Length: 392
Image 1 (cartoon, rainbow, N blue to C red):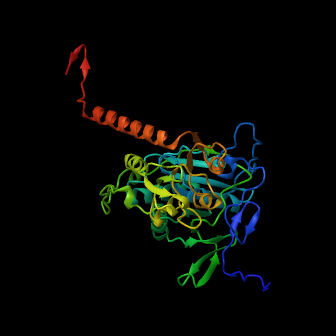
Image 2: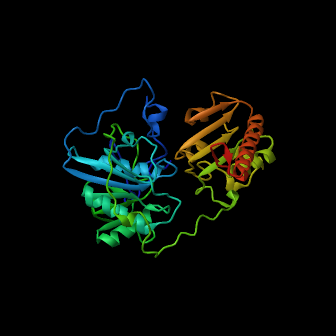
Image 3: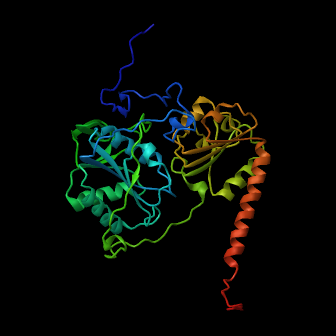
């Protein structure tokens, strides 16, 4: 028998964690005794041990993290970037977070010491000039030694590149390896690995940092004055043409923000697909449902299928095998609908409905239809202004 160990690619980047550098990552690593909330970077449940502040010393320097929010929440990529800043910061360095959009998340639990919420911006609106002027104003007032941003296709990567050109700052993009002295990224179609000294602006690739931290930030909310240019897109160079609505079924599962997924417990596939249409959600499936011929192979989610990062993932009749849980490990909110309250997926879920999947699907379709009907009726009702008892 050949006992020669498998050779590990020496160029493979490590993952930076609170416990140090981890060279090889095989799936999600959960510390023994960690709560479900702690595993996903959320505030600890009531009664759990509180995490200490990362530092109590006066701040002499600042690392700035800039990112868009999505309906008030920070996505997993942004959480990783914020964790990277917190892990790189020393005791005399504060981590400041500038959020373009509304912020409802507890950013202190994610490592932020100071938080600037620019609620007048929207991730779904394209206003690069306004955002650039706002970012430049924040940098001028906070004077950070370094800026970190998630390198994504939803606005942050574009804004980071624009700022680097505007400010003449050194920049590294698609960074997959980072520490206090250098950054690294793949080069030549991943045939080589390149490193350089830590630049002024780091655009971090997804998956380079473990967002689970053993400490919290101070979480102080502050306000910064923005220039008039940040209020309107004064130059008129770019024009937002709005969002083009497309059928959710045409969205790749890897890009979908809302997914409903069916397992062996779904007997009425037609009703399930009607629910997906009512929600405007993409359709996924477990391996068992795919093997049974209920769904095409490209709908399979799991270690041997697609890995997804949806904000909302609803699993109907899926027990939650290890391979399936691996495929949804980066989903933000997981909702499980299952007759078995002790199924493995229940441990991963943020919310569990213990009940019949078909009855739940039918009830949800009725609720969504009713809610949309009420909203349409309200929109069609003419506005009436009443003053001193006289209808105008």
